[in-house]
Image (cartoon, rainbow, N blue to C red; front, side):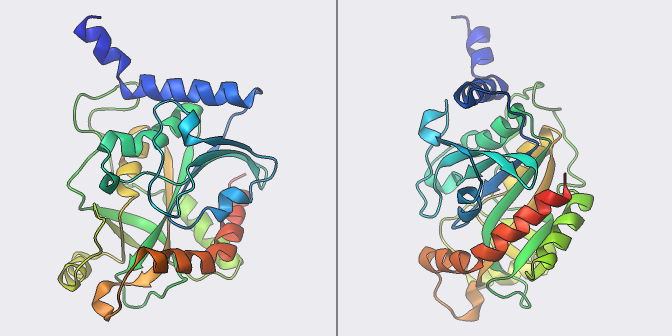
Length: 283
């Protein structure tokens, strides 16, 4: 195979199309998801609540990787929620698991090639803003990409988007307003703020949290920003929702992934109801 042909075969759009075709074949019937949802740590309850769903393990989808972090189920859930056809990624992979940045954003690209126009990216996050409490939620207004990575580095794939995509509105304002209204409708406390994305997997030091506050961040986590860049590159609308699972590490508390999952579990009832209400507002 010539070098040009090899490069063509390895283009992100080509691989994502292979996965999308395999998913459609697995469904065995016409299905056009409108909204894609990516579920963060401990938030699989929403995927479990999709009625009459087709469930496909990531291991059965071409080029997909299985999450190794606890609280990430590792399956694609296809169905309808609140009258809206959805494709739900129950769990994600992270850069800290040893993957490349392109592997981290690959599932979002597959959602785009499946035909979704909107992606809801969720995560478990630590509070940087001192007024936030575990069990609260935050709708992302913007983000700080402090991962040192960008999924668009390298040759641009014009089938996905332009070489220099605009990022002046990473999170759609109108959709965010609908999401905020939906969360409040079910009695959830939700803020609007800036998310700072880090590589992980170590939690942040008190000095780093102090720096993030100076930079204007409200919550911190180890995902979402790279996926947002990839989604916006494809022209997809993005809603970002953080479940606040812990206070920042300058509060004198010892942080652990187990405590993050525990707080996610406590919030899952309102989280599921709020996402269902959000989708209902998007019909």
